[in-house]
Length: 333
Ligand code: BGC
Image (cartoon, rainbow, N blue to C red):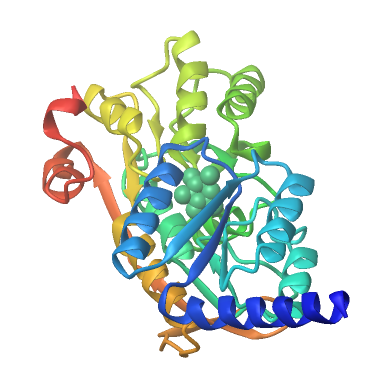
């Protein structure tokens, strides 16, 4: 009797939660890391927009640890969130967690980075191939004349699908120039977990191998650009070698003003994070928001949206990141 009563209550309770959640959805946000400045902004903007729409957000951050992130997602599933938004540390390792979400009938949105080989519902990101093209085009437009340019290439984390897309975009621009003998790649490597210290080691190895005659370092994000620039500083080369980046981190914008970093790629995070919150709430309410693209993750063509990106250098810092309120002019000094 007692057991029957309990199970009736549980059923009622569960139905009530599921029903109430339509008006006040609960969103589980699982982040790989908060290491780079950008992810804190993504999180804060996402929460603010979701709250405006009446939703609650439960945030987990996995500190670049796959086991921990799978556990984070499992715990959000057991708390019966209405929708999951995931920035995977490793797009392959998260497949397992998405399968659990599928079994629990909880929709999944991949945020910024794709999750491979599983049935996710949406993929919301920036045009990552264009990020790579923007970085490489900046360098290609400033090649020395009369001799091949000597460049170093520092890619991101090999576990991050985006890192491959950035490289693909860079390849689109650089490979024809390499084939034409206009560019020589003197050293290249992947910076594990996007760690600045790993990028520094790669840059140190590049100088040891290739000497000081380096024209440019195509680096995939600002954190790792910071590491590469530290290595260049040790050799008195900072400011003499073009270095690219991505994210418009405050430290990177300061380096651009000082001249030790040449450019960054600004991604208006406000747009992506608030779009993702709106879509998450919509999906939680059982709607099918419209998208503008698809991305093949090996299992399906995932409905996707690619936000645009902006090339930033000293000359347009004020008219881009500052005008957009991303940084205050006073903080850039
Ligand atoms: C993101 C970049 C970020 C990098 C390291 C990439 O997936 O797109 O914005 O700098 O991860 O967190």
